[in-house]
Image (cartoon, rainbow, N blue to C red; front, top):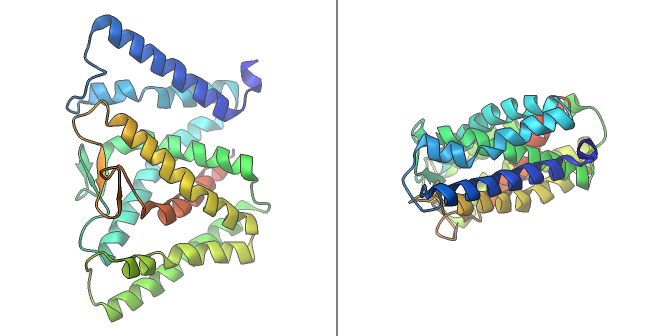
Length: 264
């Protein structure tokens, strides 16, 4: 029966079984794991053990390439987050987020983000499978989306620097300016490749925001501070933000293309 289950069902089953095991073990040993505490690697990775375990089970019963997705998404997720942070700071003086634990590279990312990015990539790819994956070859989509994003970013950043002159305070108008490359990428993919890319990017926006919020809010139960805090248009004390919606539409596309590239 297990090999016939959809990947998301396998993922949910492993996560729930692991979570129940954590609760039972913590209750039996009175370890304090279920109480808020400071960050330690043992505590964090003990709580997040369901993430790599889910990919191991998926590789065993569905497709071995899920292990390739696990590695690629973890590494490239951190790189993508770093790029977003750098681009943000080229527009705005205040960072998009502030990490509470294990921040690196001027706080643009954190070493604990590897596992969350793998889960995000899995969810985006499986959501795309449910909604309907775009037809056509992968390489043209990658080249067209990459070119559209790079060119539109160069134009948006160049005009911003010409008009504003330097990174400045966050505002609604300036944020809309920052989001122009996201819209341009979606429009170009829809026109030149498949309209389904536009549909997926629209769907990815709320899916990404809700998933990030659920993860961040859930982990805040176990730690003295949230894993991060957004600095603009905050939702629930900064666990999420309205600025994430356009960024997740682009992030979902990024992870969907990564999952497709590894052969899923």
